[in-house]
Image (tube, rainbow, N blue to C red; front, side):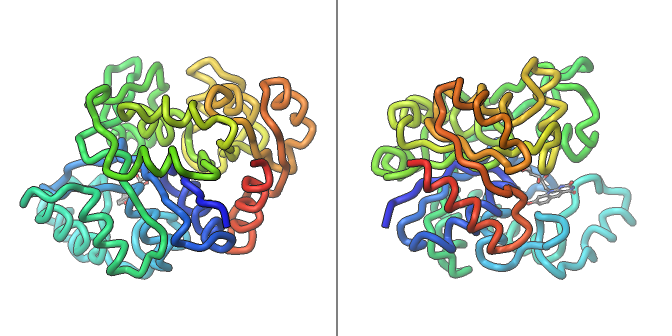
Length: 308
Ligand code: FO1
């Protein structure tokens, strides 16, 4: 049974991870989650991508949103609105419970990796879930109107501002969380999840030593497309590929990741682009990449594993 390390952002990363856990023993899977999306809001330490992974992989995720908790209520948010508080970023009541505990433990000096491992254990997650770094690293979006914090750009302004550049506050200088480099060095397969390469994978790779560690294992690295045709499966990737000067397609993503990965999973609909991806020096597999249930997620995971 291969040991697999997955570098993952939000919803796409979590759905892929769910498929991986259907094919591989959970004890052989390490997931390194993006922390560039993290924010402090209402005094709470919020880690959206770690939570999306945790909730998805332990059966708690809100199925339509893809983030937050299934069946959650919004009583606290209703009070925030009633009292004139900032209500552009929504936390459900149960999600707030998790955030109260995380925030208190971080304030008391525990590292994010320890809190995350404990939440994963209590929620019954068999795989290892690691934040890329315990140090503060924040994705910042450079727009024509100036620089915005990631969630302010994505949620607050609905990703409407064109992206001129992306930068990572805190990197270089952010150290890998305990176990991250080892998980990359010792994996039989490393998967770059179908996540946005600029704002989900790059902030992981911006952690000190991480990009180099992945490049050193390139022959064992497989990436999965987050694009089908000219559309992103979810989120603002298509617009970012365009404004950052890349082909708005899976081939554009493959060219961004070609120095890191030796295999690339294309959607069946993009099968005819296979030769373009092979021309970048990548092995190619094709599968239906929309992961709407456990079986479709597992099929994508099997296609990725077939490339190593
Ligand atoms: N996405 C939204 O579109 N609106 C929200 O109000 C929102 C709140 C939120 C709270 C907790 C959480 O874990 C995720 C949340 N998300 C929200 C999703 C999040 O902004 C993105 O999915 C990720 O950061 C991108 O990977």
